[in-house]
Amino acid sequence: MNSTELSFGLLILLQFSLGLLLNIFLLLFHIRVVSNSHNPSSSDLILTHLALANTIILLTSGVLETLSAWGLRNFLDDVGCKILIYLYRVARGLCICTTCLLSVFQAITISPSTSWWARIKAKLPKCILPSCALSWVINLLIELDVPIYMRSPQNNSGNVRTILDLKYCFEVIESAETTLAITVMLSFRDLFFVGLMSMASSYMVFVLHRHHRQVQHLHEPRRSPRAMPEIRAARKVIALVSLYVLLYGRQTIMLSILVNMKEKSLLLVKSHLVFQLTFSTISSFLIIHSDRRIRIFWTRQSTDPNPDPS
Image 1 (spheres, rainbow, N blue to C red):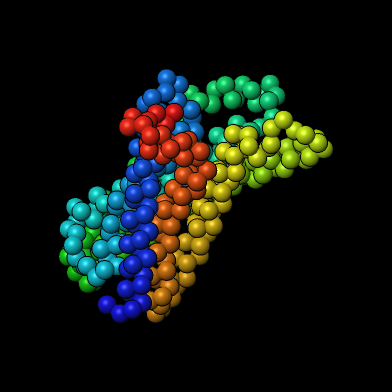
Image 2: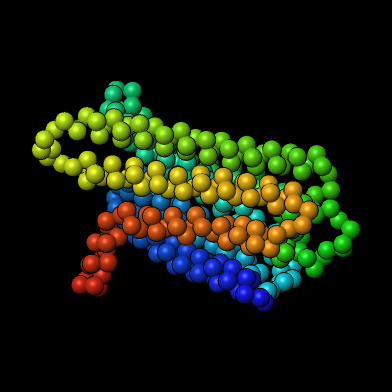
């Protein structure tokens, strides 16, 4: 292993380790908050689902990429490839859907309290759990090509048409029509949810800007707009969505470059692999940094053996 491979191996290991620890902490924290509350907030339910999706991503793709980065090959059979890659792809889709759900929920929350918005806000909490369940159904169905076409390198005959080579697994689809149909379906899902979360975030920016202009003329506002819970939550969601859209755009562009390159650049390939885990890791930092309940939790943890984060 040369110095370049060693450096990227360390980066992937660092991302995987930090991301897994932080997301497991967030998952357990929000599960405790939800279980201790008689009427859990919709944002806590959504963040629990997001932490679960990120944890699955890190336990599947994170483990596989870390082992591959450190030189391990052919460590999975067909069943292992199908199960782990299927779980990763489903979790990645859940991450897209949940981030979109979070942005739409927060956009509706900070919308003006007109009669029309008030009716939607009243019905919104009842839609969170069904929306999360629906996202599982959608992604479990959309990703069904993985258990059908994913194979282990141990069964590579050398004369098959490889569509996706992950080193530790590869996907083989002999029909060009099937490949096109799968690509269109996955692209439509990604673009739909990314477009929806982008529109919701743009609406939040507009509402926050209008709110800032409305309170700007007040000399001594009783409460700073920055300190309002809904404003803090909106800023957090906008940061998460911006991070996801930037990383999604980078991943799409980089993947297109790599697919069309005749000779793959080791630096580009390794960079692409490193960024696959970036959202799952950095998003946990953003959520922890913006949630004051976690700071209260750690303060109580040091003084009370049975803290209550809610």
